[in-house]
Length: 234
Image (cartoon, rainbow, N blue to C red; front, side, top):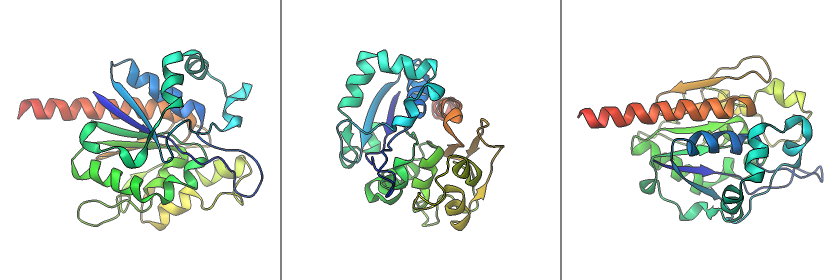
């Protein structure tokens, strides 16, 4: 199995002067879900090279066994140092794609034409995709092969308005994930703030927040196995 993980390259939290980037748990938890199945993982980002880590995600209260494991994993860190450029990857080389979150994607992946085209190519090929947390915002312009917005009339989840308010960044982010999905015609599903929540809707799997990233990866794997079984039976 070949898995592509797409990480943000954006490191500025609006005009606050504070740093942002990807959320460590949202990379580490899915990474090891995939790794433990023997999957070959490729990390990509818009700019390539070392993507910026949201420093807050590595504060003691947000560290987990898996984030610590990732930091001590020389092979994983070496991969992170050399992410490939997003515009150089092709869906033909992968079975699926997973987007970790963090606030960074709100500024780059949510407006990246290469990202849109990549996700659309996975959908056109019948392959499953997954996004979590703020990376749900990267779906807002993505279309199905028939030209309909991917999220239109589809159940999705992502970082909620309540969670954004909880971290005090409602006025900082360029848009609110929940509002953007509703504007695009999605059926936005959510649980209480910070609770694990994963939604499976056809080819799309979405996770609400950092705690949902590992479960979303497991849901994606189940979908891949189902697809593989169906193809074998044909």
